[in-house]
Amino acid sequence: MKFSNYMQEWLYGEDGYYKTFKAIGKGGDFYTAVSTSAFFGASIANYIYSKIETSKVSQNIALVEIGAHQGYLMGDMIRWLYTKDESLLNSMKFIIVERQDAVIEAQREYFTQNFANAVKIEYVKSLSELNLDSAFFVSNEIFDAFPCELYKDSKVAVVDENKIKWQDASILELEFAKKHSLKTGEIAIGYEEFAKEIVNAAKSFEFLSFDYGEKYVRNDFSIRVYNKHKTYPLFDEELELNEHFKKSDITYDVNFNHVIDAFEAAGANLKVCETQARALVNFGIIDILEQYHKVASKEQYLAQADKIKTLLAPTIMGDRFKLVHFIS
Image (cartoon, rainbow, N blue to C red; front, side, top):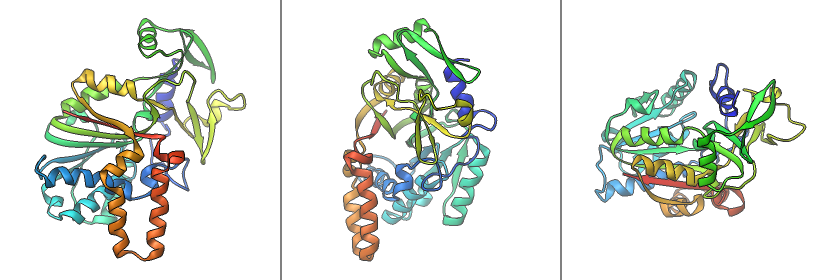
């Protein structure tokens, strides 16, 4: 079995890791920017509101989150939009793209508990179901969850009896490696089709996505397994694949040049690819924190400031995570 098929089965197959709801944060296998601070979502919403406020987009625009997990990011964005202009809860469309029924149920419960009937959330299983006039598409840590091939010296990995072996790469894989100067590392599968689906889902759009990785290849394997906040490199001699298969998360660093190539080939235009720290500051996260300072206690303010440091610090999330932002 080629590694990409093995990873697809691991994450999305019957009883796959993402087939049911998984906790994120202290009680899960890893942290995300969303689980770190609600100010992450508020900052994205602040950018969206700035476009509405200046009439660069309509108040009727759709906000679409792809892979919303429990719904916290969408919830945080909605709260900030309400703070800026409560009428937006009625004029905007709020849509979540989610394939897994169990995850949708967890999201519905979250929104019911937090918003009752004040907000209507629409659900679709696929981007292909959408035909919008204009939209903001938002995702967090989605590109690292696409299956990938493992490439090394003109060969690709296959999995046989829970062991990784190697076979000759295909012509397309060799061409990709040559184009990206890749000698060793991951080749993501599905970026091209995903980009086409985004472009076809709305007549005009902005797509904002945060993930970890670089705009160049490492020429080393970044693929790793996460379990209870412990990291296991895939090629660690002590790692037993069958012990983690479908039970732990498996991920790799994103090659943002591959993402950019896929979206530009689909007809989208790159607005910016920059560090998470720079993006969130540009979106107004510091201003939002200062507004919070005026209404919160000293202890509450310091707690939130500490969380924001995690989002912005170069040695934690600030430089490791990137924003890739496309427009049509």
